[in-house]
Length: 80
Length: 130
Image 1: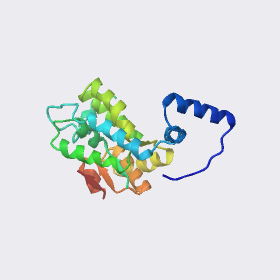
Image 2 (image 1 turned 90 degrees about the vertical axis):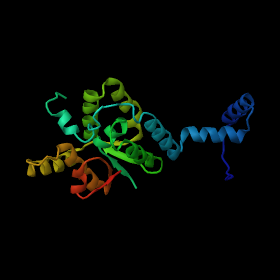
Image 3 (image 1 turned 180 degrees about the vertical axis):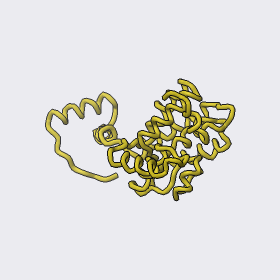
Image 4 (image 1 turned 135 degrees about the vertical axis):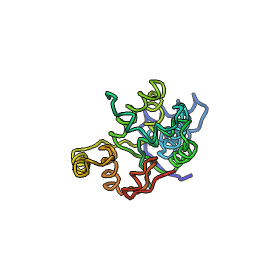
């Protein structure tokens, strides 16, 4: 953990304390959660999106197995 | 290093009957560590083929689950012009305008690897995965 110092308005501090009490969490935890929401970890987001992508792998069954190779032929003669 | 994704890669990813399906799935898993990118013409082509051959459900999966994992670049006027010129100069070739756009895009972006089951990419000097 990296220690840092931030200045908050009295109103922000009041809201922060109230939220910490409501969630039974420390002020630091609430701030860390807020940082994650405002500045999401791009690596985590990418991994989650790839997992979603992989979850639908194999959702189609062409029967021929040739659609990827012959996709230009699929389009020929088809109004798209 | 960013990986380029071709239409053939996406179609082989969803088609469990494709002979290279398992290898293509492993290749897309590289996206956990490396950005995957493509361009708008590939999206147009992929959705046209998918709806025609796989139906609306799989096409919706591609839109909802696969495309959000890719960085999709628009095809701007310069890229379109370069691709169109290359296509015009080799108009008798079997290489499509979409592939010409992909080659121009990869060269412009400095990409050398494509998730593709398409020999044209290798002929154009790119490395294809799987």
